Amino acid sequence: MKKVILLLHFSIFFAIFTNSWLCEASSAPEPVLDINGKILRTEKTYFIIPVNSEKYGVVAVENIGNDTCQLRVMQKDYVEPHALEFIPIDKKKGVIRVSTDLNIAIYSSYYCLPSIMWQLEKYDSKKGKYYINVGPKSKKNWFKIEKYGRGYKFVYCNVICKDVGIRMINGVRRLALIDVPLVFNFKKEILIGR
View 1 (cartoon, helix red, strand yellow):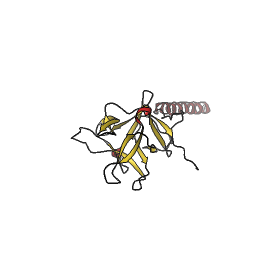
View 2 (cartoon, rainbow, N blue to C red):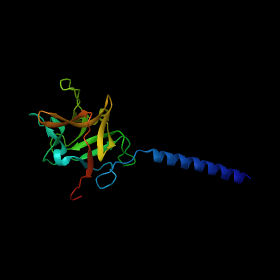
View 3 (cartoon, rainbow, N blue to C red):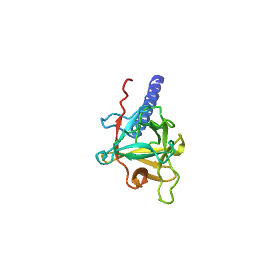
View 4 (cartoon, one colour):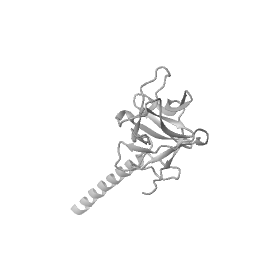
């Protein structure tokens, strides 16, 4: 009788544990996929290719003004895209998932800042917008990737929640928080010789 009761307790515990584990696994946000249907991973670098790239070009950093280290994130035609690494709060699983907080590291050939994070600039009261800039890693730099139409979009949600899109300023396509998102897909960076 004791063996039956012990077996019954074990069966109930196993059922509860398995059910809890399956519910937790099914409630995890879906992984982000690249253009080949492969899951985005931590410690890998990717390019973001706008869905409308044939018209507008790629996302990169560029120097503004005379200061060689005054960089802004923008969309440019006819330049090499800069590689991005996505650094989620929870790197344990090694998978980049939608709707989760992450830092976006951008790798640039600018000698002063080889690896920097996207961050939100101070509010531009003259233009009425927040722009995406670069700087050191910080909790204020958390962005999210969300599924959107034929691709993905970035969302910033800290003080305010807004999509990351393109705002034209003096002929430059700057990344900013606006109502119309930049829609893109991911392409894995191919590292030659590694």
